[in-house]
Image (cartoon, rainbow, N blue to C red):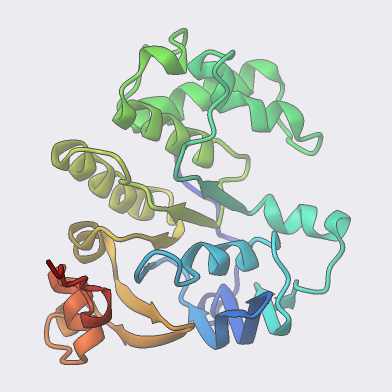
Length: 271
């Protein structure tokens, strides 16, 4: 399954596919994103790391228009989208797939029905029912789930459910330009996590998709990331390649990467 990007000009390919400019977001008194700037290079995997509650998933929701910034601007393919209505966002969202942390599969549907469901619900899809089923089966085969058509989510392992979610994310016509991955290895053992890591890279290479990955998993970050950013107190405090990240000396970055607690988080027991 190859994506058709033949209509993109040289200028399109040089331009960031997604941009956040001065994005600020508060929930009550809590400042979650603080004047964030981010330009996402097309065709690459951008990984965002950081502690729980630092705004990583909030950032993803701004990209797909599920949240609006209190201040700042969000662009997709050069078009400002943060001011668009829900109706106007529909064609934007058709170019972006979201792999949710908990997979968001329908328990009452088979694997094949889960993968075809978004296409069936999209009135603009150019395929008939048989073509949709054929595309869904090709995508399931790509993620190593050929023959799983009639299984239900309850019969699958955690890793298999994750791969169904990946198949659903790419079963689009045309294929998505961007996939947003929210903690794609959460709850998986190291071996199944490694399968997911390889799959993210494979989708980037075979479908030519731009990936934005939110994760705590440093093995995943190092293996799939072309660029890694760390979000801390609402701002990026690291922005580098995986190789460069290993050399960063900022204490907050080092403690996160090395799995060490921040001093203020350590509770001393007093007898």
